[in-house]
Length: 178
Image 1 (cartoon, rainbow, N blue to C red):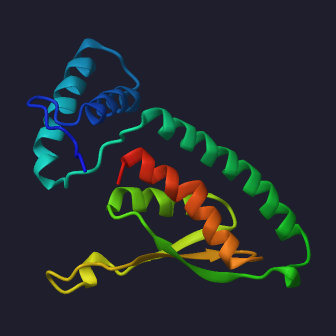
Image 2 (tube, helix red, strand yellow):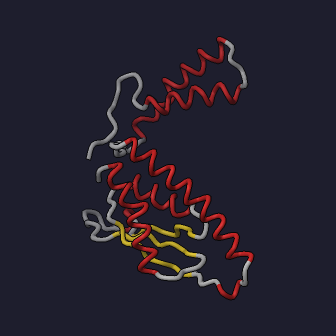
Image 3 (tube, rainbow, N blue to C red):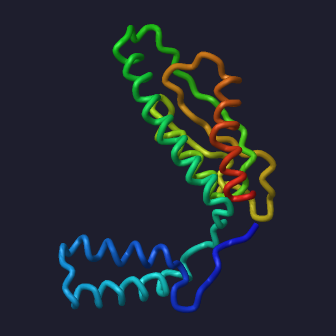
């Protein structure tokens, strides 16, 4: 799996650009002094913090990432409407449950994005990814990982797992090619 390339002056160019614009927005000023200071901070901060970062997988298919983002945005909006109807209806009809979703993803970044996607979609919340890498004995290999999620109203567990794997996990595997 490819990881982020290290550039000499700008090891994380997107982060530098973000820092620069956030600096200008926080100061609400576009004076020459703020522009120069923002450029210095946007260059120095990533260089200083580079040694604390672990290599992350690159987004290999950018258009698929954009498509996935739009899909998640659509799912968030439609799930909000569905959850509103569930909450406004009789609470006794709700069937909350915990579900273990087996993961095919191996790297922490795509797993984190999957857990965040599940949590952003109303009606589901990521509770835990296990086993934790910290809980393993040194040298022990992870055989299977699971994402434990809480569902507000569970109709069919197998269908929910298949939907999460097909709709969210498979595109993330393709985006990061892992």
